[in-house]
Length: 246
Figure (cartoon, rainbow, N blue to C red):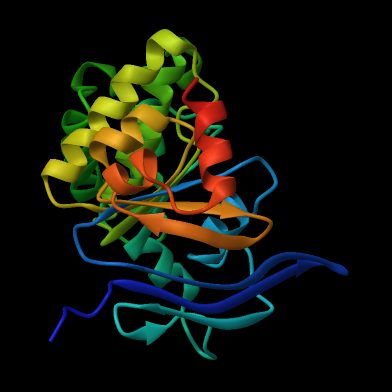
């Protein structure tokens, strides 16, 4: 029997008021898989990603994570979010806290770790993204790439089973993008399960296990990178990729 997916979205529908944004999305990711979601702006990619840990509440459907429908009644959402990490486009660091304070805040407040234990875990997470020398720095003194790596360390510190990345490099200067992609590549090699919304097509082509193309709130096509990038079946996929890869 095939292994049960770590995350399965079944018929996810989302509206903002009367505007339909997601039209019954079916999606799954296996343990250890890195899945890229690509598509034009406004196609529902980020909205779907935010539904995966209930930062947006779907109007209908099921979201099965590790065997549990996290949209069900009585689910403790803070516990879910410890196990489904999220890295945002805009870093979302607290400017008044040093780097280590940003990484340890959720460990202390949500995971209820002692200060000493939180700092031990936080330092290890920062070491894993190459920022051991920045534990006492304030976010405002860091480059955008360093700030995003702090945000990744913050997500990793909670020991998640899945990390969601929402356009993690789109706010960065081009020369800083590589440092963030290197961390993501390292996470993949260590077996982290990741779902990534991104316009980094070349990185998706070389690093992803699977690529999903969305448009108009629907999944149009998906497959291994070699198939999707070199021989897409759908005309819209071909049109989008020819524009993005030009």
